[in-house]
Image 1 (cartoon, rainbow, N blue to C red):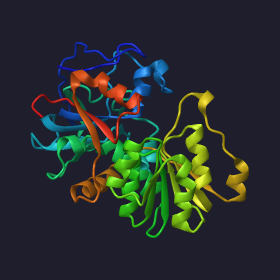
Image 2: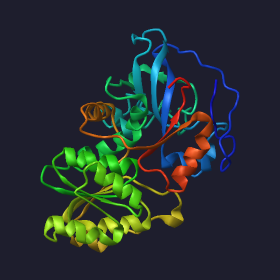
Image 3: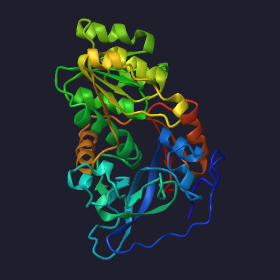
Image 4: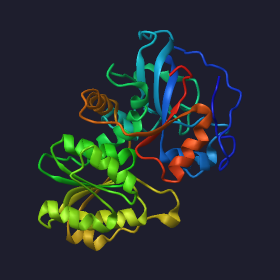
Length: 346
């Protein structure tokens, strides 16, 4: 089957010889229609993830998978042709985290699509049936390819970890694929939203989907201050995670406010410093936010289907152009998501 794989870290993706797998009990063979491209894909392809030293190559990346049911294994009752998105973090269902509803922190993963397990840059993918979510008819396959990671991560960060409430002010540092959704989720919760980015194209996209303000980092303190009478943002969602983004996030949050960390770096030399005096004396809450649970993702999908949230797609490329998609992300040319069209008839 057609695919694009990591054959050597730091080198362009290339096709390898792969057979179409067959589904076993409880499994579904998903025909991949489209796959979103995330900055994490750059880290995976470059060998810059914590697990890279043990990653077996070749490896097919791509974790934002939109597809349809092609074949089912024993015990699975799903209609052929049913459109689905893949929840990419396959929890065991038995560890304390899974039992407690925190499947995004599972101790004994069965698979991690596109990260340590095969991903969506291939025509067919085996998925446990319980990690597929139906796609509403009003959401097309390309839009669905922005949902599982970009929207799911944003929803979990804003609603669950940030606990954003109506009337609050939320600043989103980094108006990329996750950030544009985070801003919209905050608005849907009844909050005011400020998007911060160094790229004018990203700020234009943020304004187009309803930002109350969209500014560069230099203008962010004044914009947030203007909306809060100088108090500061109730919640800051940092989708960048580098030293500059982290410092700005701490500057923008009010006393007693919440800072939700979504973006991250994997190079210890680039780790941000935490100003503990400000955290303590301003009594800040600093929380991490990782991916999304299946119930949360189902609710987020409905927000797209209803038109409350608008996917932002800057470019759609064919599977064989996957390296161009990665380069768009690397060079900061992507506004929202670049999507790889995997199915030739899409």
